[in-house]
Image (cartoon, rainbow, N blue to C red):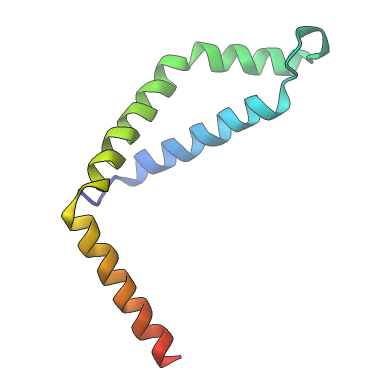
Length: 89
């Protein structure tokens, strides 16, 4: 349950950067857009199905993690280890 997989995490990070670039670089109004921005937005539109698939998969994985007792125990373990390290420093 804790192992979401590096590939899933990497996919999520890439999609986040991909969408952030689309939101930040393209003008809202068509007449102000550059041709590169038009192509980028068209690419985002063409890949919507894949983007939503990855986001839905991440949502399911993270939603399961939020209610996992194993995850809470792991967080307690991390906190105790961090407290030990800080007390020894």
